[in-house]
Image (tube, rainbow, N blue to C red):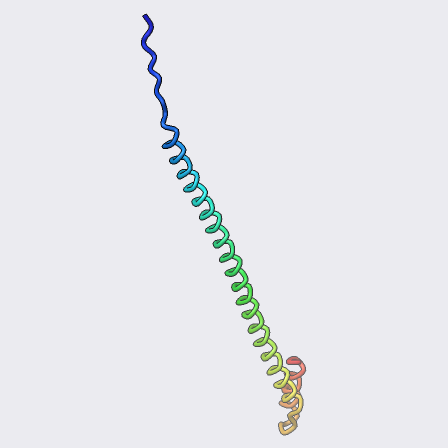
Length: 102
């Protein structure tokens, strides 16, 4: 004799409620994940831009310092070329130093 078959009925209302709650939670989690990824991307772009500006500022300062050194060396070379109050032997070496400085 075959075993008796039991028919189990499901409560469709409770199943519908739990699936809609699960769908809402899944949707909220997905939206929160996407929002967090977008915020991280915006933060990385902002940080990269700030780093590039800082690097450019540093390069500008180095270039300015280099131009200042060049101007100082040029002025010293002009002074060496224009000195006339020394004896002729030392005057020649000072003027040659000025020429090399230029």
